[in-house]
Image (tube, rainbow, N blue to C red; front, side, top):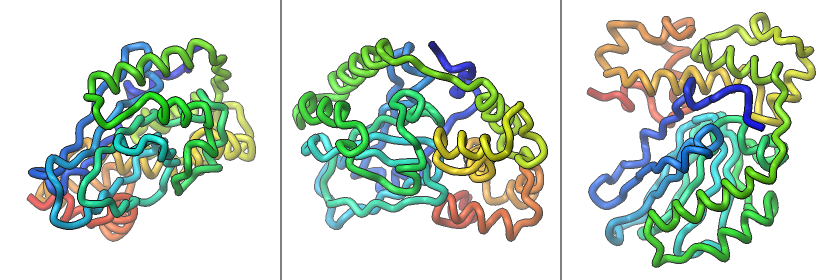
Length: 271
C-alpha cells in the first residue's frame, strides 16, 4: 500500500551548506530506483578527494527528513539522524567517505514502525533502532565499492523491505501534511488543520511521524521554501520575501533562518 500523498511532488528538501570546501570535499545526491522515490528522497555521498589539512565541519540545515548514514570505510558504525529543529554541525576528520539515505518526511516511521520522537533532534546508533538494517549495512558495504554498486545494493534492500511491509496510512494525518506542504508552511496550524482529528491526536501523529509539532514542521517547510527560491541578498531586501511567506518582520525572519541554517540570510545569500 502506498501513502495517499506523493510528498516528493510538493517538497524538495535541500542541503546547501555541504560544499564549504568544494575543491577537496564533494557532496552528491543520487535518485533511488523509481519504486522507492515516494519514500526515499535520495541517497547521498559526502567524501574527501584528498586528505585535508585540518578536520572538516559538516553543517546540516533543518530539512524535515530522517537520514541513515555510515562511513564506507567503517560500515559497522552506522547511524540514524532524526528530525532536527535547528541546524546541526558534525566535526569530521580530515579524510572520510560517508553514504546516506534521506527519507522523505513521515516515511521512516511509516516503513519501520518507529516513533520519530525517539530520535528527534539527535542521532543514534542504527543498531539500537533498526538492528536488521544495521546488520545489512555492516555486512554488505566495503571501502572498495563504487557508488553504482552502493546504489544497487540499497535499491535491492529497500525494494525487498517494502514488499514485505504493510503501510498503515492515516488519511486525515496526510491531509494535514498536504495542507502544510501545499501552503509552503505558511498555514495557521491552530485554525487551518481541521482534517477530522482532534488537536491532541494530531499532536501525537506529528510527534510519531515527524518527530515534532505541526507548527515546527511548518516552520521548517517555510524555511526550505526560501532555500528553494534561491534569493540573492539584494532580492531579499527588495522583494521582502520574508513577508510573502508569513514572517511578521525582518528580525523574526533572520532569527528563525539562523536557527535553521546556522548563519544569517545575508551570509547564506551573500551575492
